[in-house]
Length: 407
Image 1 (cartoon, rainbow, N blue to C red):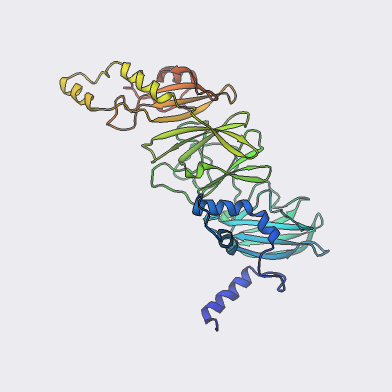
Image 2: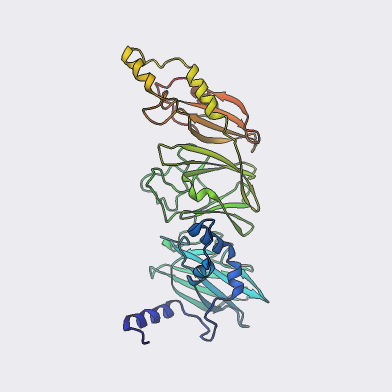
């Protein structure tokens, strides 16, 4: 069967932009490279099919890996450049990129510490040599942005420790400065404080329920720099010693993360439906093998908050018979708990229990602040709004309104 003119032209263009150096090389990607991408394959299958792994999912994953072979030393050592076109590994900044070298039967990823991101237009191997390896020149999809990758003894890098993207050749930022991000900020890359606390960083820079940020890229290192929360679109992984582990944070809308000072734990505040909640705070142990939730840390907050509301005096505005009648129709709402900060290292967490977000709730907008022992979930101390504001400041707490009531 003959190829149509359009199909033939498309095939020729693809080969020009991303050809294999060795035309006699086998069509299939070497199995050693596929073994090194086993975590990415698992992520793809989990994200696309959940716990019901589709038969043949591994073949679907491999079918969307574009690759070519590069000669990187004068002695003929080669490397395999891979572009991961699979759903979930591409965003507005391009697709995931990897470069693998081979020693014996073992392949090692050497494009930075964890690979890169971008849309390639042209890749060439330079005659110039750095540390015994040829330099690699990249022209990105805009045809203007260029990068020079050089061998540093362990990896190919651009001379910077960051992973690079194609957008303006800007590095993915690490946690050097957390800011209140305004309208002019590029929310795909900005490191913004969380909505509820200045001690957290927003993972997705979203707020309302329908809001998404598919091009989001963030590397959020732990205080000791040994662990990194990596956000790529809606995928959120933990990177430890070059290994990437799945986390549930990609399914948490409007999530913001607060690392513990000793880097052994973190808390995540997130919403089920955007601004109106319900808002939850969950605490996790962070190890070399991933994140493990510490269950029930906030389990006593709701009951305590409801009890306080039932014991509290009526608000000052409930004065007339009609107002009392309306008050009787409102409910006790206490489904929201938002994280503020760590205390006593990673042993305690400070969070606010909110008395409901809408007009159907009694004491709407009021809150109580709780100091909680993480391991047991025991409430160690409570603070009224004003006491908490005086003790901890207003940067990490919900807003206190003039007409709020003390619960």
